Length: 298
Ligand SMILES: NC(=O)C1=CN([C@@H]2O[C@H](COP(=O)(O)OP(=O)(O)OC[C@H]3O[C@@H](n4cnc5c(N)ncnc54)[C@H](OP(=O)(O)O)[C@@H]3O)[C@@H](O)[C@H]2O)C=CC1
Ligand SMILES: O=CC(=O)O
Image: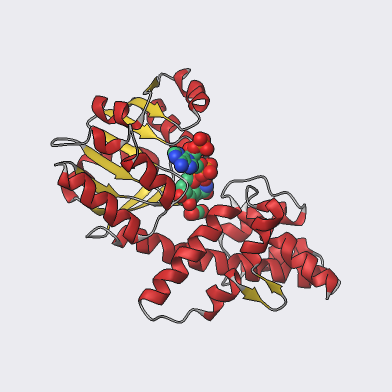
């Protein structure tokens, strides 16, 4: 199966590599073209533009940073729309809001192509290991056609119905994750400042009812102040922002998520403040630094 792949960031690189290692023919494009070279060593072909990739491949997958990147790759000059058409499928795996996804869906289908949104849950390591959870919605025939690729990329795929449902599911999940990360950071700081060993806290958490892979994976590195990016903080803040907007649209009050994103006691704008301190490219667990700063200054 020949697949086009747009976007070779942390996730895209790992995912495209998995496809190559599993026998797919992959044509890649990335805004910073130099990032394509590494994949060529593993058999990838480079497309000069998104349009060139779509022209060559029956199915093209994209995973890009945010709504504006997702729209730009489709609608700008040399973009996906220039070559999409009957018999071609476009699968956007970026985390975006349902409005963005719907705009892309409308444009692609107006030109006769088929569209699937398929954001993923799971971070750099699950992407490398082919253990993502795929949250697909849109064209069911394209979903069925993409199953061999999804089986390589993920451990489980969900088909959630019409376009927008995948985007919304992903935002709900990441809203919960962002709120949990704030609470976890506060717990680590509270343990340390009250004279407890934070490693003992991790052991206790891991044996109880709130044990989870995120605490297990991130806890030890957070204690070491190591925020090497797997899921960049700037993307987590984008997801909190989009989830809060979804809450607004549906008249759902989300004080915990709002607090995580906007106002938590006196460290206002936890995620936003972290961005302004240029922590945005670090892992989202770097929110821990903000909690620590606040706890020192209060
Ligand atoms: N990292 C993670 O753990 C997870 C991330 N996600 C989501 O997946 C998506 C990608 O994440 P990740 O790989 O971590 O992000 P990265 O920041 O590592 O990569 C972003 C990608 O988007 C491209 N890009 C950004 N702006 C534009 C633009 N205007 N036009 C064209 N291309 C652009 C970048 O190109 P360039 O190289 O030129 O900058 C790069 O390929 C995001 O939506 C994120 O929320 C979902 C699950 C897990
Ligand atoms: O979107 C991030 C993730 O870990 O999932």
